[in-house]
Length: 425
Image (cartoon, rainbow, N blue to C red; front, side, top):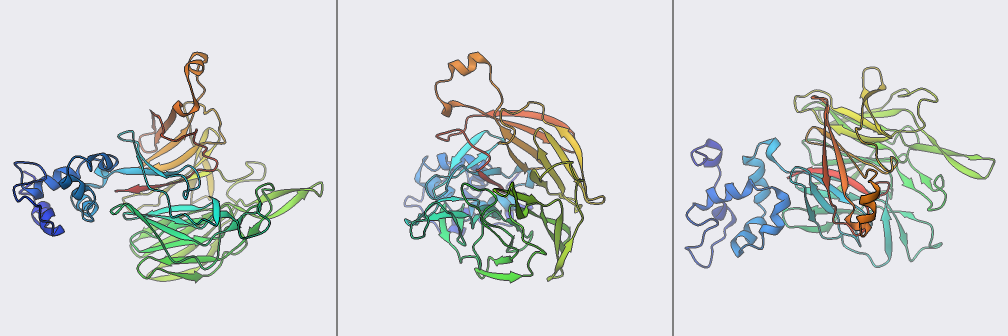
């Protein structure tokens, strides 16, 4: 029945579209089936399994490495049937490979490391964001062997892009200004990425280092960075996301972060965290000015903004903005500019300060480890065998479910420093 569907018949066969002619004309992707139908069947397989399927035969290696596979999936698979993946950077991506994790199939897939510069090391505080079938790694803080002192990190302006179709990295035009710990978001239905604020921190003194207010926009088509109006004040360690109010009405939100620092007893530097947010409007192709919102919580209610996850609304309504604060999840009310408690995670994490928090396919994923029984701790031979628990919350249904997986990392994942983003393939 799929052969006669309008969507299938409107697309050319895979092998013809690729211009690929097998050495043996009798060969087929799946013996006994037309190649266009076989390509459609294979495209339904989860993306996390593609790497293993490449080794099946030459034709499958060519198909699962083709540039048209992901577009084939987007054209024929429903939004919910795409692979909703979590991209995780456990350490410096130039020396440690990033991974993609498929929660639906509990499958991990290793990606190649980023291009390595022999003069720099220890990249951290960078931001990762996805757009279509590409993964972007922007900025960060790193150490440069050519600078002095060696124990002081410098902000980076570098930009890299990973293409999931060719499974390769490429270097992009650097940002106009180097920055780490900044807000970033891809503008929906466009080829543009916005970055705002940031700076660089000293390794020993958290409140030391630079802060900045500059804002830039990256044009993917031209590979150029364009300067925009700066933030109303210096802001680093902030969170950015997009709010879509229509096809031509979008807003870039920047929340939280820190600006100036003060000293305790005249010696110890302490960050001054912000309780407000600022908004820039993108409407009808024009970029507006920054709009400042008031404080999102009262004095003494909390010290700083927690981890943020944003659930996009496919019906054109405002997205759901959620914050993980220790074991509680709060929802942001745009009307009252205040956070309201939504729920609490069912199982308390071993280290509440080290927890991953992302939104994926309409659900909130809280990642971490839980306390094990004495018998389990004694039977465990090494830290690598430790499991990671995912507590998943569905805001509309208001229900929780739990998944457990064994990460492939050499050491336990530290969510305090790990960088994550999501992608649909």
